[in-house]
Amino acid sequence: MAVPGSSRKQPANRGLVSHCTHHHVIVFLLTFFSYSLLHASRKTFSNVKVSISSQWTPSCLNSTTFELRPNELWNSNHLFPNAEEATLFLGTLDTIFLFSYAVGLFVSGIVGDRLNLRWVLSFGMCSSALVVFFFGTLTEWLHFYNKWFYCCLWVVNGLLQSTGWPCVVAVMGNWFGKAGRGFVFGLWSACASVGNILGAFLASCVLKYGYEYAFLVTASVQFAGGIIVFCGLLTSPKEVGLPELGADEEGSVEEDANRPLMGDDDADDDDGNYSIQAADTDSQPKAISFFQACCLPGVVLYSLAYACLKLVNYSFFFWLPFYLSNNFGWKEAEADQLSIWYDVGGIIGGTIQGLISDMLQKRAPVLAISLLFAVGSLFGYSRSPNSKPINAVIMAITGFFIGGPSNMISSAISADLGRQDLVRGSSEALATVTGIVDGTGSIGAAVGQYLVSLIQENLGWMWVFYFFILMTSSTILFISPLIVREIRLLLHEWRLRMLAE
Image 1 (cartoon, rainbow, N blue to C red):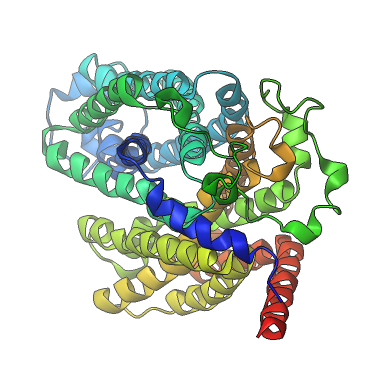
Image 2 (tube, one colour):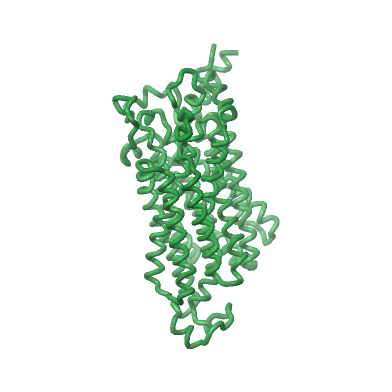
């Protein structure tokens, strides 16, 4: 007795290798490094906050800097009377950026499905680079300090940077089908962590000359990356005469490879009432609406789950170096270097968990197991001793179980959701769905930054970790219907295999 779907799985697995061309490699690298550069500029801002705070406060009240210019000239330009108010404003800029980034993601996804993805991505990278240059370099060269000007620039930067993720995920989804998607996207989603490391490296190399040069270097590299993307990125296989994913060819490997992991043949009839295909499937595909994208099975559940999980993940991104310095008394440079181990754990976790989900042909059960271990690792990390090696190990484990699922939801699962059979007749859904998932997650992350600071100030760091455990558990709760459904399918397939033997 044959197992349903087994005839498709074998060619789909072989299709990952047999249909990989040099165009796939170029697309992988260009999208990887384009988003890495966007993340590098964000990390630069986080890494130079101490220097910015010192520059925005009077030297006579700031013990962390030397007197670099006449006191009367500096006091006529300073923004804040003390470093505490400057630090608070920098935190406000983080919140402003995340909220504008979240709003921009919803819009950018819709725009990306209606315009050329290469144009949108290149425009976002180059324009964001210019804004970063104005914010950190030009204002310092001109000695122009204005809070409202900084806020406006950072709102614009958030909107422009939001063009990145929906576009790169959509391009990757156009080139890579279901065969090996978990592994490929798990490896590719390391772009954010690589960007964090790259941003820290570039900033540390030139920070001794002034924080404005850190912004200048990252903005220049990002602008150059945007030009390269505009000249060299291929948004879909049809641009070079290759068959598109899901092409209706008899025995096509890519058709099987494009079948998403969000469902199976047995569930097709149950989901028929959700179909948004056009009546004439041979007509030119059209982008689906925002409301139609929200109605796709799994989109709302994964969006809410990602809001909770990205809150935890981004809290580590923004607060981990500060926590290590504040809680253990370690030097800021040492804390910055140690925090990289969280990103390393996330890279490994996303790749391995994506590979396992490919083997199982299911995503939700892998996420559930990882998040259950994440609860335990968060509890253990909250009680980490004052030892850098032990802290680094537990930090990497925590990154593995939190950063891994976060990378899967934002990349491979978003591609699965945007490539469902229900949108086969209107395939331009990838960017819209990705924008919804990541936009909802960014709203959760933005709210989380305020809550973390509030909880830490009033209750202490231990309660911050309890809050992280609550949010991680909520992530499992939101996707629990999908977990139960996919586990039942796995058990059903296992029983069929047993009967076939």
